[in-house]
Image (tube, rainbow, N blue to C red; front, side, top):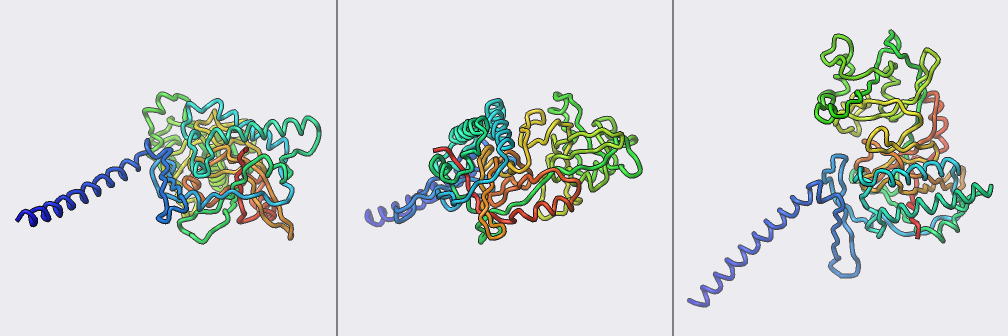
Length: 402
């Protein structure tokens, strides 16, 4: 009887232990989905043969919610930069590097998103390494421009000697065979507009009023879709008339391009002109695959003095330049990462450098795409002619100071 009892006891104890392990696992998994814990979460797992270590990173969306895990070693790999001159406008790159570095300096305590190490931690790269990279590049460009010489940052040998070159392979859950990053392009378009509503320019862009205390408590603007706004709720006779300020009136095409690109340069019918940049949205996510006019996400604008990129609030946004700026996933890849894209043009290898200094709803999360700021254009035809020389997909590298 004692032997039978011991066996039964062992079986019962095993069952209880099994269920305790399951409950503990579920508890830990539930905790891992909370925004507070996954902001820097890294899960290290040794392979069964003990020959390699995989570092799994928890990817989050713009609302800080867990989406999926990815093996960092499958996405990022140390390599050498190919032997070709790196192209960029020196003065413009220096401007974007300097403005991005200043953002880290000014807002590191107020914008906790930029403190995320992100996926690059799987390669041992921290935010401090990124800042060191920006500082070094600023110094080199300053010296080279002051001495009126081509910058050393265009020399692949200098880059390979002074930087870690980390190849970024696309990770696209919907297209697992994609290896190169998709390179989309965005721009600032100039549109004619009116300061008052007319029969031609009858689609408004609005600004939320400056009373920040009210905005923090009365988030009325999150109740309305783009379609609600365009129905006239803020216009005379509308139920929310007086809650926002109309900045300008455009055509519907002008509005959609302003919403998609984030910045618009309006040539007003009175002869004046001004830049306007997105400020706050209505809290509705951008939905990939849905045509722009059917998107429910809506942005409120502010007038700005230059093209603006990333920033946690409108008056903190980074001033950016075309040709040296990428928009991307700043939560999971990170703000201020220096990017080199490699592609072929006319049978020749091309390398182009820029800074991830912008973002957008389509990139949160997105580990398989970058958006290249191509320039300022009069219309879509001019824009499309310009981007024909740019790649649809490219081999992409991230530079980190050694």
